[in-house]
Image (cartoon, rainbow, N blue to C red; front, side):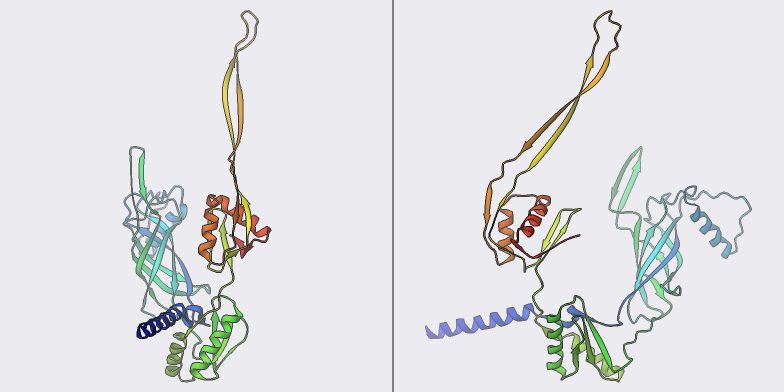
Length: 368
């Protein structure tokens, strides 16, 4: 009996230890190294080879101008006054993200988006398009077959479409031509930047680094942490690799409820709690209907037949009972209490706002 109890205690300790480790997060999930960032690239190009689904060139003159300039650069001169009516070409914008430490010759993915009135980019080929950064320099060149994750067909006035057809992607469609300098190896210190400002998390990151590597880290504020790193590039990379994989227990996030008023979406984190309160909810609907009526004059009266509208307005309200919501300390209890009201997501937005105004919702309510 005593051995069974001892075994149960050992299993419980291991379970608690495993649960604690499962909740731990790595520093690389909470912070990033300053200067190690992506850079946005943008370019303009032409997609050819479309099956009659390209731009209507009479409505998009920039497509015709781009074709004329391209043919001129390739040694083809069009006679003056030539009118081009091409349906297999579309003008597009090409966007990409240049990852940190990218070197010339590496491949990156690009997104191709129609900027004219093309019906579909399916089956098209992007011609060579230079991609520029914010400074105006060319950092990559894109070209390749566009892959569109959709399909569509139209005939006889009927149309069927699946997903979006005017945006496609080219996997590895751009070649890096210029590298962006990354100041990782300059100076005595490297800086870690938290994804979200939090003084408690910053202090725990500093403690985790100092426990593993000595007194080398210091928090400058609630977001930035200064770390003394080795001067040798190889040693610095290895040091940052070890720092990024250190585990720590992050501080519990502040209670927050996010409400999207356009879609009716409501999302809350696990720190949200409610105090005991009473909520009554009922739906109010107004129906307005119109019925035409004909007014016929008497015989030989000289009047005219007049059609009038008769409006009928009805107001109905659903009965809502007063429900008492008990204080909940966990997200599951909060969800269970709010579901007991039986409100739709759009109604839930108004209920949450009223609970916040009454002081019963212990969370920050953010409407996006």
